[in-house]
Amino acid sequence: MTLLTQLEHYSLRFPQEVLLVQVQYDQELDEILIFKGFSSSLQRSTPSTPDISLIPDYASIVRIDRLKSPYTPEVPEYIEQNLSWSDFATYLENL
Image (cartoon, rainbow, N blue to C red):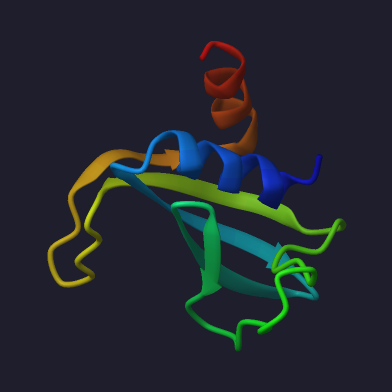
């Protein structure tokens, strides 16, 4: 299961949360918002086909922020900030 798929499944299980994920690939950073099983890039165009992953296999996750839904960019309500992938993966294992 890809990283993105794991994050999307988490967001389906916890629809009261929004995940803001910062990834790095091709020497650039991208921010991806994940909510109720759907992902959207905040900095690049999002492919219209869900078969195309927003996070390439070679990408590294810089941080994951958990926010309360609904997401309001002007006044975000953080549950947790700056989680590493290993921190979040541990969290997933303990669910």
